[in-house]
Length: 195
Image (cartoon, rainbow, N blue to C red; front, side, top):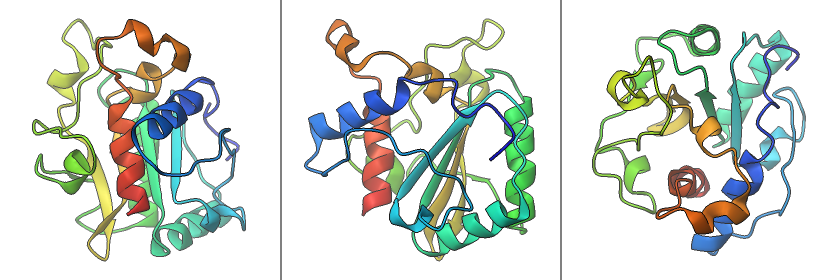
């Protein structure tokens, strides 16, 4: 993808991989794989994470690649790290999803009872909040839900305004200073994508 700034949080992948290895038996490659939505290798990965602050525009080939990807069981997770309501990344990603998946259920709110919130760790209140502030109120007040696109009864696109990417952008070795690993929700996303 030539638009956006998808690569501005370099420590997220190592942190998420550490959490997946720490808590599960899922074999993982110990380094991130950067892949474009129009790559023929896209179908080899079960989960894609994208984040950013800027405008998201897919090419027609990338749009077709995303459709093939989700039809073959892949999960695309997009996280807006703007910490604002209707920020540029969120608005442009949402517009792309409506273009790719037209219909009334495009990016519908996920219920707090969704399987994603109990795929490994239990999050009975829905998506965990982040420590980032939104105009002094906190993301969980304005963004207390996630949205998604389903294909054949399965979540295939997950969209967040929570800023998880910003939240998980620290060296995995620093988890020892935290009372709770805040990347545990990433484990749920990966387990959901793998099962």
